[in-house]
Image 1 (tube, rainbow, N blue to C red):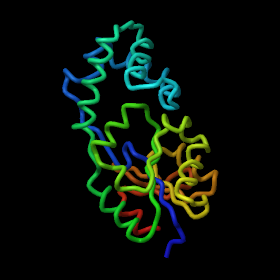
Image 2: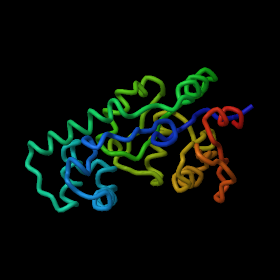
Image 3: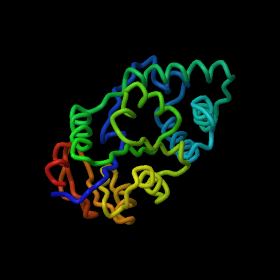
Length: 216
């Protein structure tokens, strides 16, 4: 029997996934830039957006546009923001195993949390999913001002769950973020829904969340 009292799970590519937007909904189309330019802009602004440096989805989008060399007027920013949020509300889904496993964990008496590196656009997505009602706490990096693998974000989650690292499990698809949790003393599982195998960093590798229940 596992001694775990708390389970922290990543959001994107662990518990939730996004379908491809239509060509008209794509940010590249809306902004009129190439995929490469948009990727570079996202990377350039990632830390600032992910720690809440900007105060709203509109400001996050404006920062990306500026990094692309664009100066959008407020009406264009609002319009593109609305298009992107509308897509997030209908185009983001939970994996089939997410709710059954979350409910089983809570049924076993465990505290649960979602912990995600993200900007303001993730909030309407999780609200549309109804995910907040399925866990004990939801930790979004832009709301707490820290990104995985910064120890602060894990500690915020543990404090909200009234748990200690030694009694907690962390699940993520990124080895670097598992490393951050392991450094604090959490037991770590790296999920790869395409090809789970031995993890070179020593995290237990799983292909789906049902395996987590079996290995805890």
